Image (cartoon, rainbow, N blue to C red; front, side, top):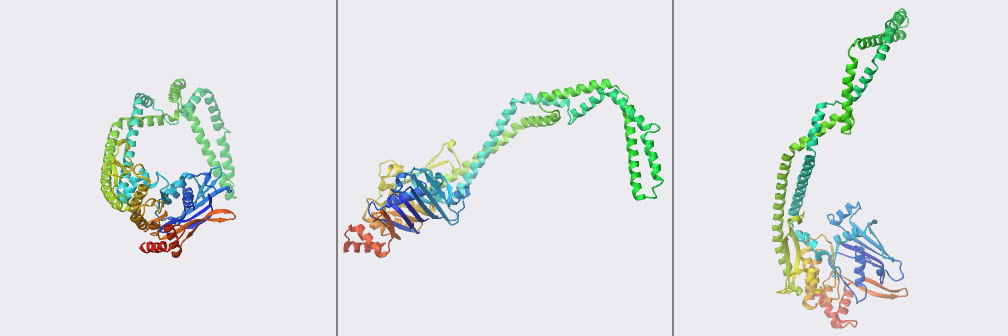
Length: 554
């Protein structure tokens, strides 16, 4: 609910701070005292259109701050969480308007956009009487209002989940069709490429192996000569193996003298002798490999050049040819299995669609049942408000399949028939200003317990009514105030007398100019204000008595 409103330099308001309480609060004052300006300022704080004409003459900017108490489960908290804005028990919305018409908005001192400010404001407060196409006058809110009234949150959640499952199944099916279509255009290529790659049987690292072997075959004579020279160096009479043996004998004779030092040296010499032996055997093996080098070279070059040609054809490194074969084989397998896969997905899609339809039809039936109860409840509120000839109707119409969505298969819109014989139509198009305000009051009384909005503001909804109708309007506002916070700008003493709290706005002239002030009235002041509203500037004893009577009947 709205707990505090601070206004600076808005039209005739230089500085105004108002604390509000729960329940029904009446705002009264003479014409021109600033009641409408107060609402304009509040509208500025919750994201309504900004106009530099609102800035008080001589000031360089206007500023309005509205503080709200926000329950734990209020929708505003989710909005703030999405923007990573902290919110404890209170939310402070602030708007600063410059003379250039540009404004800045803040939520708990964090800069925000005006659209976010408006979204927050609409979740916290509803103004009736000034802003058309807002709140209950906006048809896009009627479905949610009906679901709230009927307590259909669980059924609506089932429909949302079923719709999400249906959309996911549809997307999977369409994606599988698209993939199948794309693969079909490549089927001939896939089969040819797989046959070719399988026939060649390229192996990882094969290009490097073949290239090295090719170099060896191309330089076989020089390599053989080098190996023969190396073998001779190892095996001749004064070769390396004999030199190592001589060293081993010389050190071996002295090893017992310095074992810790000489034994490692002997071990190293033994290792060297082993390595030399291995090298000698390897050289002998290569030299002993007597084969047709020219023939092998030709065969090897055919394989190597074929491998490289294949790699160029598929525009990948030769080492990736085995991976390409695996990939293409998987694609062909997928294509071969596509028909079955699509059939499975199509059945899943049909099942998901059927589940959605079933859930949505159930929700639609529950909505129609709730609509009858809502129509009856609102209808019962209309006669006392001088709307006995009016008929409120919740119209539920089926949507085209293309318009099915997470909220079901129905469109919901509140309509009104103000006179018998006339067609029903949208609330704001059929009802006149006074009728519309009273109709909104009747709706709010019925829906108040199920609405998340914590503050309702009515601007002179009692205009043109008096007597029993005014009394009925006041009684319903008082009833509404027991469920949610209600603020009412009124000129009706009968209605104001029903309020829990009474604020009076008046103009005050000082050297600095004329400005608006506001005060909460105590019982005596309240009686005087009501008497003034009844009789005018000259307050009579009869007016005071009537005011006392109104307060006593409240």
